[in-house]
Amino acid sequence: MTVHEPNQQVVPGIGENLEQHFVDITAGCPYGLPEKALYHQALFDSLDDPTMSVFLANGYRRNGNCMYSMRCPGCKECVPIRLNPETFMPNRNQRRVWKKNRDVSVGVAALTMSDENLALLDRFLRARFPDCKSTAESYYAGFFITSITRCFEIRFRLDDKLLGVAVVDGSDQWLNAVYFYFDPDQARRSPGILNILHLINFCRSNRIRPLYLGYWIESLNAMQYKSAFRPHEILVDDCWQQVDR
Image 1 (cartoon, rainbow, N blue to C red):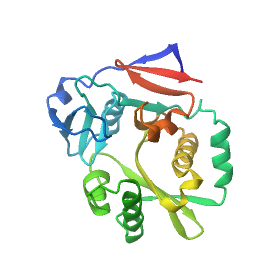
Image 2 (tube, rainbow, N blue to C red):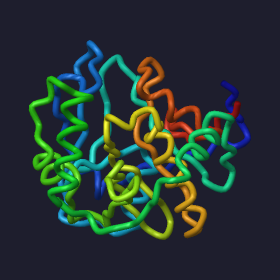
Image 3 (tube, rainbow, N blue to C red):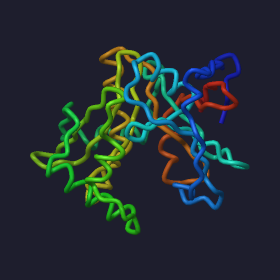
Image 4 (tube, rainbow, N blue to C red):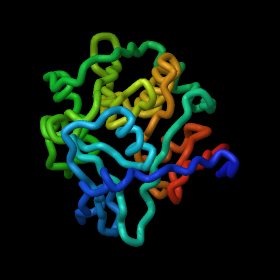
């Protein structure tokens, strides 16, 4: 990859007023790596859009009402990644995925634990994470639903059937992709790629930037689709660096 030095953006820290709320908690690595994970995390009742923007720019993620970052000793595999929708250029595969899914309809809706959503998420979890003990209800109640910030869903349908759901945090200055689940029987459509393409279009239509995609781990094949969106930016040593082809 090529990192463009002139396009580096140094990120100010979150400040002592926010930092005082955080604690460090050790757990097993959520991505299956052998090292112990260290979550630097805090619970909040609510955060305004500028404060949420500061957290996202510093590589923090949201889990319910918890904001956290990964500070695992001896491991820096979790790299925050984001896109500038205005500079994104689709590659051949992404254009192919877009064309293949012209029959898919997309709509924005309020975050909801509908029977339809829960049934699809349960199927997705059983197919992708067969050893996972969490249920669709626990994902919504403990992970998706929040009072910290505004959260909504982008739903993908094939005819009248639910194909996938993107859970998204948003403001008029940034968009944060929280989670995406889809019908495992439709994996040939590359719904993960389709989702990001639609999020990029949503940002362009509403003049929103940047689009945060969460963590990227270079050694995990399941995450390689994120880095295929170019140019993108990664957070390294408190500095967002643009990565080109």
